[in-house]
Amino acid sequence: MTIPDIIIAVDGYSSTGKSTFAKMVAAEFGFLYLDSGAMYRGVTLAGLESGVIADGKIDEAALLPVMGPLDLHFRRDDGATKLYLGDRCIEKEIRGWEVSQYVSPVSAIPQVRAWVDDKLHAFAAGGRVIMDGRDIGTTVFPNAELKVFMTADPMVRAQRRYEELLAKGEKTTLEEVVANLKDRDYRDSHRPTSPLRQAADAYVLDNTHMTLHEELVWMLGLLQGKFGLLESPGLSC
Ligand code: DC
Image (cartoon, rainbow, N blue to C red; front, side, top):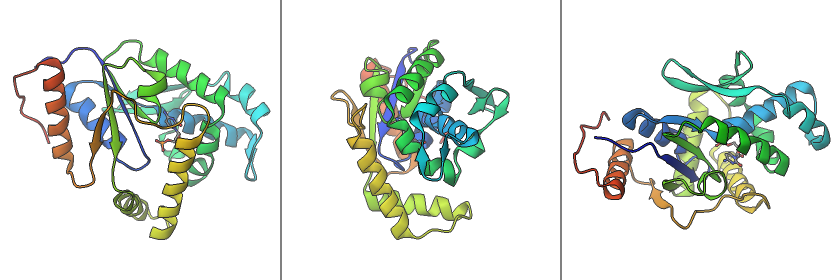
């Protein structure tokens, strides 16, 4: 089965399983997976390490010269795409609590968004990419050949996130997770620059009651319908 070298944009609310879905589709259909949120997290980490983000404040004027020369890029590592700062793999640090606290306001800074968008365009230049984020189908790749907008019931999302955090050994309550999700949904969809919204030509995937296998079958149906791929491959999961 041949799927053309297209760009697939996957956007949606926090904790809807965008990255799990996008990684699964990438592995199944031979696409490069790129996590745009990781770039915002990388900029935030650099800001924290250089001290321009500290004590609950982001010094925006000082962050821009720190960000400019950053060598943030993705590398394929053990079959996964990981974010590097120079030669240092920063996948673990960017998922930590401190980066998570600051990344939303950092990602709302227009110059940061413009810088990240340039990098994302360069990374995707070879095509055959699936990228997840909040504004991929609306701003970064408005002409992406296929757009998916992911959503799920907020309580189901919160429960999933809560279980993930518990598994990582982090101490939190379901109430805290619900409050944090609501806050991030609000911030992401109300910022002036590139707010999270569904592109008019996006296909909505509400995975509240779906397994990963069902999501993959849904995607296969979409690809077949859109690109006329009638041959049905044996899905791996
Ligand atoms: O998907 P994530 O949680 O790793 O994203 C981190 C932050 O970056 C989140 O606050 C939303 C923001 N983000 C964004 O504004 N635009 C994107 N394309 C991707 C992420």
